[in-house]
Image 1 (spheres, rainbow, N blue to C red):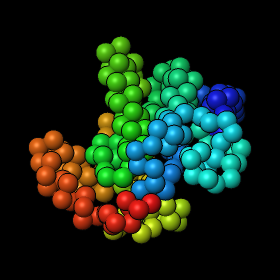
Image 2 (cartoon, helix red, strand yellow):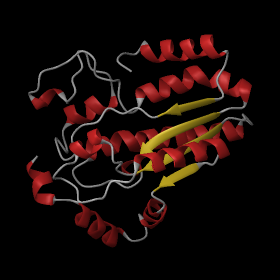
Image 3 (cartoon, rainbow, N blue to C red):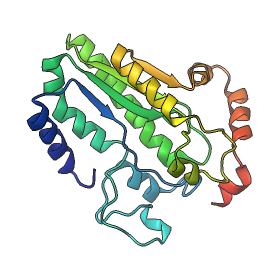
Image 4 (tube, rainbow, N blue to C red):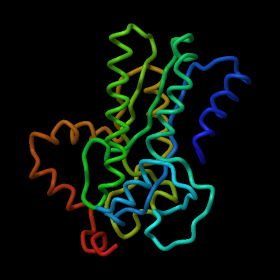
Length: 222
């Protein structure tokens, strides 16, 4: 999703080749290394919108910019959904939104990323209700995933978190099952559902739990 024009091209290509859409799975990510620029406005702006030129890190990082960074985390999800929704409505299809636990339970030293993911969850939660009120038969499945054992994901949090990465293929299977059965939510690993339910009820144990999974010294110094 390198520019605002790309989502339109992607959806139109799919419609031309397939003649319509039954499923749209949104699972792309513009990620910043965990623990960096935790409170920075530039870091948050980078995650929430398109930058010109783009970089593989926020502009305050001092790294060399590259023109092929993805449009990240929120706007391209909305664009793709808006463009694909008429076809999904015709087919009574499904929209699968792959997000993060940090879109439900904010963690320390991840404020820009959490902000983007909370916005994503709120947008599709509202859209889910709107479609039901309007009797539009398009299912929306929101997937809440934790750290996966992909090399890029593990490298991004190296030295920052003590959390064990979950097997990527099992997470993918959970997403596929959720979309195929048109459930409203998927939590993987399953314990994240409990954590989300306890978020407002037991804030102090949750903070303790987060501390156990973070290398706070390394994160704060990043």
